[in-house]
Image (cartoon, rainbow, N blue to C red; front, side):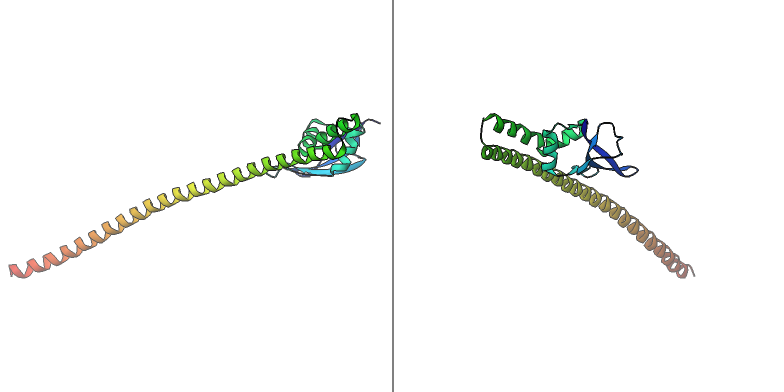
Length: 176
């Protein structure tokens, strides 16, 4: 039986959510599968992958062929790195403890990279929000200035009208 590691689509229209499954190569995409080894949610930023690492490594080592997308997900999670290191252990290049140390160092570097990206995204969002706030403050100041000018003009017109009413009243007694 030719075994594939593939994505099985779920979720609603316009909001895809995938299960990572082991299936017969002849089975349809959303059809029968042998085992579910994880989930993939591309809707989050960054995309969320929940993977049973040991089972994924087992299936890759026994020859299950992943699809292109799943291969990228497995590489990002370190399944192929661990397979490579285990191959070195089998050949006698180094022992199991060294392989685990190398994998842990690789994973730590990967996590630091993801953290740096998350921090950068959060920082850029905060800066964008600050810029929007400053722009909004400037717009509000301009609006407040226009309102103040209109109020001042209205007050001046009202004072002028009151002065005109008072002026004819003063001129009328002088003529009589």
